[in-house]
Length: 147
Image 1 (cartoon, helix red, strand yellow):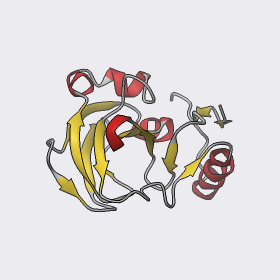
Image 2 (cartoon, one colour; image 1 turned 30 degrees about the vertical axis):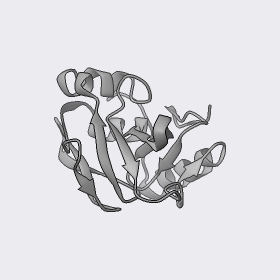
Image 3 (tube, helix red, strand yellow; image 1 turned 90 degrees about the horizontal axis):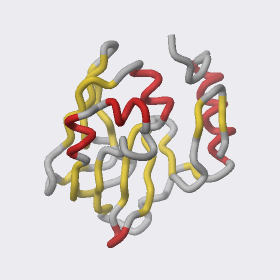
Image 4 (cartoon, one colour; image 1 turned 180 degrees about the vertical axis):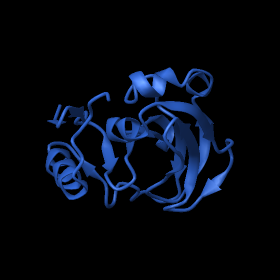
């Protein structure tokens, strides 16, 4: 698992570095999505998670969830067109899951991509280390440390 400036990135996920969202193929052609450890660190602490309802269609670059933290309120935007199929209700009730286990129990949504090529433009495997190091360098961001 690549670790960049204290931030971990499981090898088996697909990452949208610009939006700090990860994706994992799931059964039935669905894709599980959540915030990366960088996204969580930037927020400092997610206190409210408001996903779109199941059945809601969304376009690439549009929000499929919103989060509120002590620092900001923002949209979680998807890297591809799709439909929300399920929401992690436990993470909605207990946002500590997102803060403490963003790649596990803190997943946010299950979505159905409109097209098979949903992975286009996403970074995976060992390539994620270089991609996030470049992002961190460009933003002069120190990494995933608690302030």
